[in-house]
Image 1 (cartoon, rainbow, N blue to C red):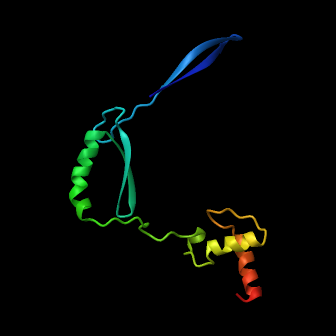
Image 2 (cartoon, one colour):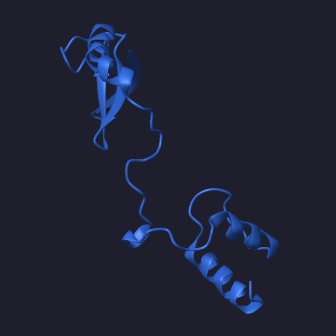
Image 3 (cartoon, rainbow, N blue to C red):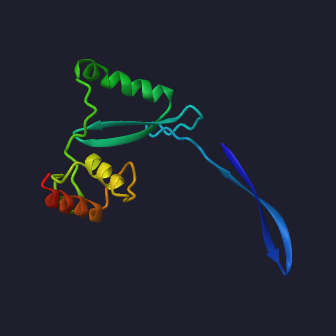
Length: 133
């Protein structure tokens, strides 16, 4: 893949047009061969995720090597370790979906995804304490 860009070089008040060419080469990490068929692949082992760029032949070698193990393994889409909240604490607070629902009913603007701000969590906790729920 090539990208071309016209740039200028200024010499004594005069701009001299030049062309700058950027070439992107896809390189097989296993054998160093370049080509358009090289693609990135990810796999994990013992909780570590690896990424490698491989051409078709190298990818087939990877599959051949892992094939017997993949054939008898169980698929597991869950993270290998529980995610930790900021500060290293496990998530023991109120359910984010419930907090969002409550915040919306109170006219408090919160994102529909991602982390609920701590001040909103605190308001929810205080409101529940007052209402006895």
